[in-house]
Every structure is written in structure tokens, then in C-alpha cells.
Length: 95
Image (cartoon, rainbow, N blue to C red; front, top):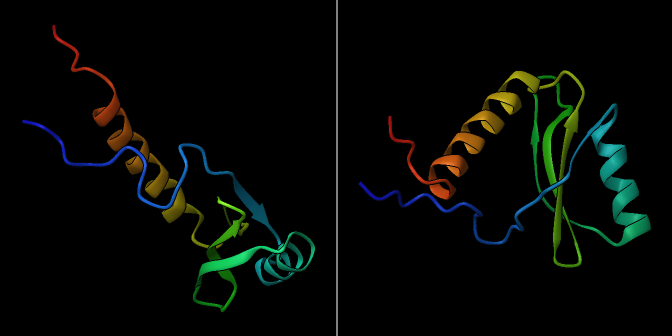
């Protein structure tokens, strides 16, 4: 059965840096001011701190989040994405 999962989603490159910071709002402000980044999204955690955010600089995306906020969810998401990528990119292993 063929997989319809895209190895690289539309609007992303094959490698996306993920930055863990102590203050997500300050980091977004810094990257916007210094590098001319455009905010693509932000997902606040239960306490209002940014759990995950994405910025666009030129044609590239960087993602990040606050240390400890939604960290388990992010790790689960990375494992899921990695396994989907592996299934899409690697040939099946036969016994």
C-alpha cells in the first residue's frame, strides 16, 4: 500500500532548525527586529508562554518553543514526523 504522506510538507524545506528558548515572545521579537523574520504561527501553552512558534526568514522556516512548555508533546510530534518520513523515504525492509 502506497503512502500519501509527504516527506516535506508544502512551504517547508527538508531541514528545519528548532530553537529552545527561555522567553518565546522575546525571541520572536528579536528575530523579527534583527533578521526581518515574519511570524507564521505561535501556540501558547496553558500559562500563556509560547509552546511552539514558527518564523520565516527569507524562504526558510525556523521553529522554536519555550523550555519545558509542551516539550513532551513536541518530542512526540518529532518522533511521529520522523517515523512518517522514514516510511515515505526508505524502502521496506524484508525479512
